[in-house]
Length: 94
Image (cartoon, rainbow, N blue to C red; front, top):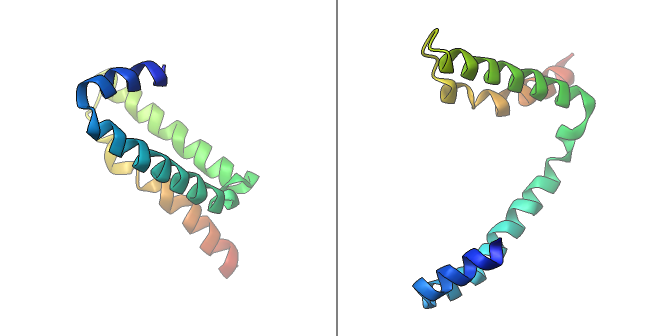
């Protein structure tokens, strides 16, 4: 699928596609390197926090889709970063 879309884009944008063929692997490689530094979050303690928070966000999306209440779910996305950080700080202090 990627080969087909890149062939179509290469025929449309020519030199722009050539430049992106250099930057896209660098960007994806940096994302992989960053993900390796987050292995700490694979511990069961942090997975349970992220899973429960994800479930609450999905529930809020359902409530919004059913038009029961207009919940702005995007405002709660920062909690995905803050909850594991709070849990980590709490484990250091206690």
